[in-house]
Image (tube, rainbow, N blue to C red; front, side, top):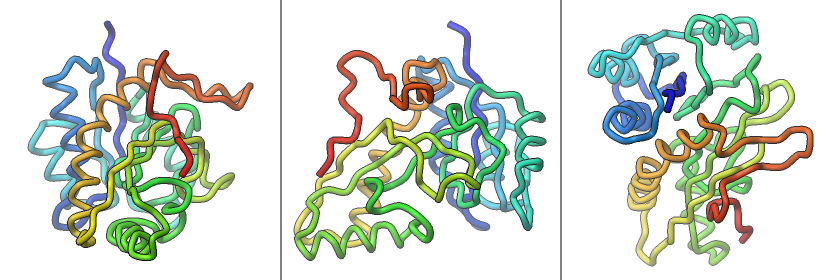
Amino acid sequence: MIKKKVLVFASGTATGGASGAENLIERARIDELNIEIVAIVSNHPHGGAYDVAQKHGVPFYYFSSGTWSAAEYRQIFKKFPQDIVALSGWLKPVRGNDKTRTINIHPARLPRFGGYGMFGDNIHRAVLEAFKKGEIHYSGVSMHFVPDYDHAEYDKGPVFFEYWVPLQNGDTLESIKRRVNIAELNWQPYITSLVAHDHIRWDVATSTIVVPPSYPFLPKGT
């Protein structure tokens, strides 16, 4: 089977992060996913994403912009030909992309715990508060297709993967974050491969998500 090319956008931080991007690289090399990470793009020139790229010999591209314009994104897409674009902790608006070939992973269930400002500890803090109020019993991991930011807000686009992570009495922000991150690392490479090979796809004409038979990870509601 031909390996599909995946271009990863990962903000990380100025001092670390990008664990999802590193996990994608490692799993792509040791598992039978038939994907190849062609480059990592980050808005930090020498942060965690840069370190991951250097460690694994993957091309790195520093992307800094005041506008995050469609033209700038298209230059990157052209520089690193890809079958899909995977956002893995990318905290900037995306423009000029093919919404059916761009995916994002989010460390909570959508849409309630998504949108502007919902990143990092903000997400898990909101989840913990809702749990303490008795409003929810699960956090989770979501993956969704990504429309151009000029036509949608953050974390919009149809969700094609939802994995529930049970919440427990005595949970803290850190314990929730840790269990959700484990689920992210477990599932992101496999689901990314399914999208890259068109086993999961967004049929825009019919406004439906096409998935493999008996696929159990579409959103289940509350």
